[in-house]
Image (cartoon, rainbow, N blue to C red):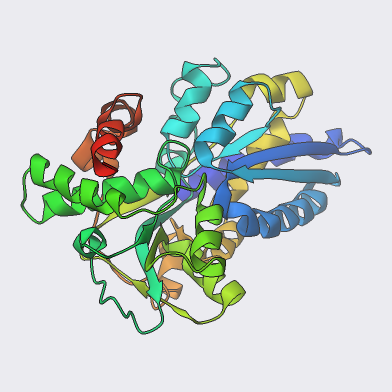
Length: 336
C-alpha cells in the first residue's frame, strides 16, 4: 500500500477516535524548529488549526520557537517543553534520545520518508550580476572571496554547507585530503560565523558583508522578497540533499496530555494540503503529485545524501562536528 495511503488511514483513524472527545478549552502545542522555517510553520499552523477545528470541533493554539538547530535541540533537552521538534537534520533530533531520553531511538521509523516530510538543498546566493563569477563550491575557496556561512557547531545550515562542499569535491573524483583542503580554503574566507541561517542572511543581505551566502534553496525566494532582487542563486554542479525530519517529543506530550493532537499535527504535513503549502514556501515536497505540479519551480539537480558519502548523520557528527573533530581542526588551521 502506498505510504501516503498509510498516513491518510492513520490520520483518519486517529481523528475518528477523537471526534467525541473534543475538549471545549482546546489545547496548546509548542513547535521548536530551526532558524529559517518560521514563515512556513506560521502558515502551516493556521492551516492545521482550521483543519483540526473542522475535523474535531476543537480549538488548538500553536506556538513556535526558532533558532540555530543545534541550540534549539539542546534547549529541549535542557527543559524547553516542546510538543514537537521539526529540524533540518536527524542528529538534532537524535540528541533528544541520546542526551535526554525524551524519544525512542527509532523515532525516524514512525512516519514515512524517515519522518522527513520535505527536503531542500544547499545553494549559493551571490550579488546581482555575480561580479565575482562564482559558479561552484570551488570558487568559494578562491583568494579574495568572502563567503557568509552560519556556524556549523550551532547551525544545521552551516553543517549542510560544509558537507555539501566536501561531498561535491568527492563526487568530482578528488580524494579526502583534497576535499578537506577545499573546505579549509572556504572556511578561511568566512568573515563572521553567525549562530543560525537567519542571522547569516542578515549579515549578507542587510549588513552587505560578503560576496556570497551559502544557504538553503528554500530560503532564496524569502531573501529576494525581503531585500529586493539584488541577488542571484547559483546551483552548484553537485550539492547535498537536506532532509527536514520531525518528531513528537514523547515525554513532553505524555506529561502535557497532548500526544494525539501532536501526532496529527505532524501527520498532516504529508497531506496534499500540507505538501502544497510546503512547495509554496519553496520546500521540496515528498508528494510526487505536488512535485510534478511544480516542476518548473524545482529544477532537477545532482544531489548526494549524508548516508551515501558520510555514513549517516551520527557518523558525520562524530567525525566532523564533535569537539576536536575535523571541523575544529580545519578552523584551527584556516584562521592562521
